[in-house]
Length: 230
Image (cartoon, rainbow, N blue to C red):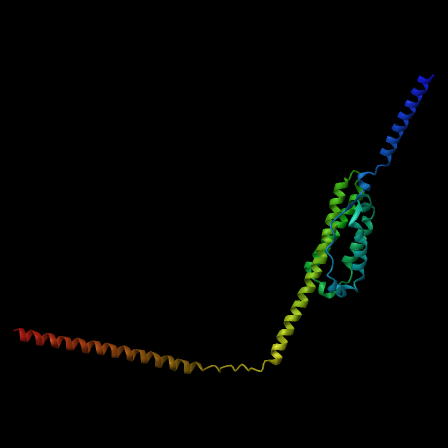
C-alpha cells in the first residue's frame, strides 16, 4: 500500500513539473515582440531650436519618431503607416525659407523613402524581425541626417552674418582713402617707349665707339713697336 502511494505521488509531481515547463514555454515572447534599443537620433542644437519652432509638422514628426528609438519589430510595423503619413506631411509642408535648398529637400525625400519601405514590410507575412530592425535603423539615420543638415545650414548662415558684420565695421571705421592713380594716355606711353629705345640705342653706339677707339689705339701701338724692332 505504501509503495502504491509513493508511486502515485511521484507520477503526480512529474506531471506537475511537465505542466509547469509547458506553461513557461507558452509565455515566452516571440522575437518580434521584444523591444530593441537603437542609437540615439542626432538632434537640433539647442541654440538653433528657436529658428524652427514655428515648423509644426517638424515638431509633430519629432515627437512621434522618438518612440522608434526603443521599439519591437511588431510595434514598428504596426505604427509604420502613421509614421509614413507624418513624413509625407513634413515633406509637403511649408518649410522655413532658409531650408528651401535642393540638398535639404533631398534628405527629406530619403527619409520619406525609408519610412515607405518600412510601411511596405507590413504587407509581407514572412518578414524577419532582423529585417524590420535594420529598416528602423535606416529611418532613424535618415532623420539624423535631416537634423544634421539643419544644424549645418544655420551655422553657415550665422557665420556669413558675422563675416558681413566685420566687413561692415571695417568700411565704417576705416578712413583711409584709396587714391587711384589716373591712367596715362596711350600716346604718352608710346613716346616714353620711343625715348627709352633711343636712349638704349645711343648707349650701344657709345659702347661701339669706345671699342673702335681702343682697337685703333692698339693697332697704332703695334705699328710703333714693329718700327722700333726694324
